[in-house]
Amino acid sequence: MSALARDRILAKLRQNAPSTANALPDVAAWYAGHRPAETAADKARRFRHFIEQAHAEVHAVTPGNWTQTLHAVLKARAIDRLLVAEGTPHGDAALDDLPPHGIDCSVYDMAIEAWKTEMFEATPASLTGARAAIAETGTLILWPDALEPRLMSLVPPVHIVLLDATRIHNTFFEAMTAEGWKDGLPTNALLISGPSKTADIQQTLAYGAHGPKELIVLLIETTEAAQ
Image (cartoon, rainbow, N blue to C red):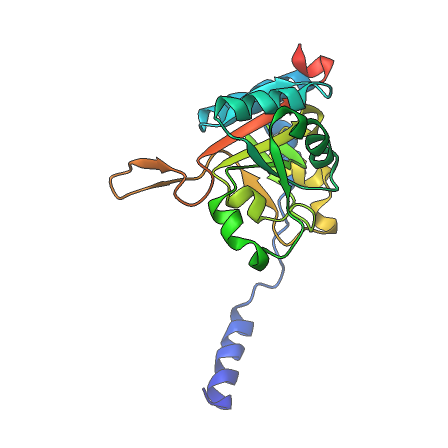
């Protein structure tokens, strides 16, 4: 494009530009009326309803028994190996509690190039933590980092997520504002609403084509959330 043609185009754009910008919509006010405040129990019930509709499995647990439930979930599937994130509270708890009961816990402690075959072919399940969740859509929010990389929730056929019910937000907007997303995001901020699925041209759903076949949520409920 010549300089003359470019200048002509820019001049036309400036000529037709509005003199004033339209006022931005008040998003916060819309959401305030869209979804009134809910109790922790209401949010937990609504989150569970919608994520179960998306073929996830949810188990109500407590801070004191979630590793026992995790063990039962793995044994029910004849899984004796679990990938965990050493250095996280939930990963360290699994490393302490599961091996004595026959579950081999491997850790993500090296570059993926060094153990790609093991990761893709010999890791049946993984455990990650959820940063938060969204009740309105039954969605988990994961923020992968160096301790708990993205591949932990993408590759193993069974993905198990530990979620504190007090971290469930009403809406996506509430999650973004309460979690301070404007102040910084990880390289991958993950929104997960069920196991991996895809559909062909005839709209036949298939699960596990591009990720985990099963999504299992261990929902740590407070006394209020359990009522």
